[in-house]
Image (spheres, rainbow, N blue to C red):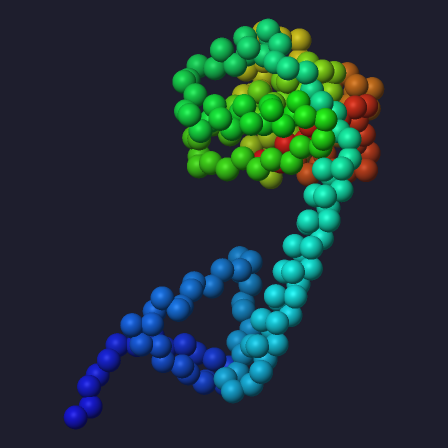
Length: 228
């Protein structure tokens, strides 16, 4: 007597189907790709899928090898070692209106420790909304400015750029730090003036969109780049 079983039906090209028993669902994974991109289906019984996986694995290995070589070169190169925290740095951090979470405090200190090393810094700070990542960027940027370096903060949207400008300005309002914004919210004339002041070194921190990557934007002495 036949017994019915629950299964997941996978559809392949030309209407081919593969049924996966519920006991093997752990072998299935949700597809994730570029938003709006329609994945191309493969046909069962051909080697197309195996060839695609082989090419992908090779590409991943190539990328990993290139990254290892890149970071090896960076470790061997000489960077700028920032000075230890100053009194102003301590005052800025003490003025934070909230209590640091343990992870936030550890992350901020790790970033500053990296900045004080005489090698280029690469550090990824991860956290959910409200974790306090912006405050970590504020402290790092302020540390860089105190050593005479300029700071660029790149964000994905004009709205976020404006929000960050307000946050940075509020946190550093008691200190002689020159801030500027560079995005579509800034007029063409103002953008031209910001570009001139950046090149002359009269702006300490600039916050903006990918507009900061334009060829007309040059820094006198860029010491820290923050990508949000």
